[in-house]
Structure formats: C-alpha cells, structure tokens
Amino acid sequence: MAGHSKWAQIKHKKKAVDAKRGQLFTKLARAIQVAAREGGGDPDGNPALAHAIQKAKEARMPKENIERAIARGVGAEAGGEAIEKVVYEGYGPGGVAILVEALTDNRNRTGGEIRHLFTRHGGSMGEPGSVAWVFEKKGEIVVDARRYDEDALFAAIDAGAEDFSRDGDLWEIVTDPADFAAVRDALAASGVEVESAEIVMRPTSRTPVAREDAGRLLKLLEALEDHDDVEAVHANFDMDAELLEQVAGV
Image (tube, one colour):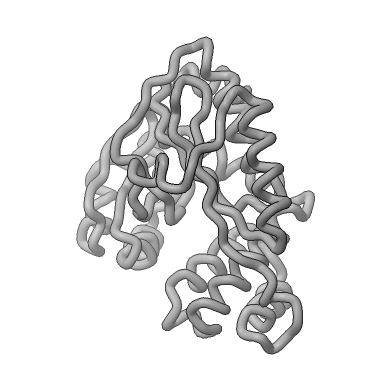
C-alpha cells in the first residue's frame, strides 16, 4: 500500500486546481447526469447520485449547475441521454494494472484517444476483463495522521468502516460502498477533517514500481485523468511515498 494514500491526497489537491479552470465542473456534471438517469433524481434513494452531488459541492460547483445536471439525467432537460459509461483497461510502465472509467457521448472517439495516451506514455490497452479482476469497489477515506491519532477513527469503525491502516503520515479508511456516506459523515460529526473521500476500484494486489518506471507511470496516470471524458483512474501500483512525491513534483 506504500504511497497509495499519498497519491489519493495528491489527486484530491490537483482536482481543486482543475476546478478553477472549469474542467472538473464538466466531469462532475456528467457524473451527476448518468447517476440520475440510472437511479433516479432523488439522492436519498440513489447513493451514486448522492456521492456525485457531494463531490460537486466539495468542488464548489454552483447549485444551479447541479440541479441542471440532475434535470438532464432524468429527462427534464435535453442533453443527458447521450452520455454513457465506458470502462477501459490496460497496463502502465512496470506492468501496473490500470482501470479507466469514462463518461462519453462518442465511445469510438474516446476509446481511440485513451489508447493513444496508453501508447504514448509507455503503456498498452488491454481487452475487456484483462485487469478488472484485480479491483473491487470500495469506499476510501484519507485522514491526516499527523493531526489525528488512532482513537479519532473509532467513529468510523462504529459507523461501519471495514478497516483502517496507516500509510506514512496518512490514515486510510476502507468501507463497503453502501457504508461510505455514513462513515464519512460520522467522521465529520466527530470533528475529523478528511483529506479525500472517494468511491474507488481498490486493487486486491499491488505491483511494485521501480524508480526508472515511476515517472512514466505517473505521467500516464495524469494524462488519463486530464482527459475530458475520464471520470476516474485506478491503478494497483506500490510506490514509496518519498519517491511518489519526487516524481509527482509536490
């Protein structure tokens, strides 16, 4: 797990910068549209929609943008029906398994562009199912271990967290997706501030990354995440936190 929580924290901070450019708002709106279309427009009965709305609020997306995205998803406004979920699978430098979740209105165009990014940065696209078996859906919450000790996380366990562990200066709390919101809210209610909170495809095994592959791997992951149609990127790399910070430039 070395460095994995640190990467979640780095991504969370970079998304805050992306939000200023507006790119993140487009991605969040698409996620809300699809969640509303698939599970209805009421977040109380649609956990996926509730999570998408929470992420939009954290990025300070205007309320009217959120409401418009929900309306498009449920068919009250035009524009939501063309967006579909697509998952791409592949390998990065060093044989790291990568799962890419995208929301697109043109599957062929997005697929070609994702394949190009893999090839350009020393990776390769795989067939459907080639790496999906390495991942399982989980809630993942990251907390600063320099600010909070183990006792501060008892609220998470009481709310249903499956496990927590320390990764350098960070705590990583793992939940079942169904318990994710309750655990996140329980931490907030107890005064614990989280660094990041996401529903992720968590790897069941990890691939160590050599120093010579680290830079190329992170460039590939960042290029995939920066693509306009990509909602989330998951990878099973195992990298020392110090090396991760060096190659990520933080």
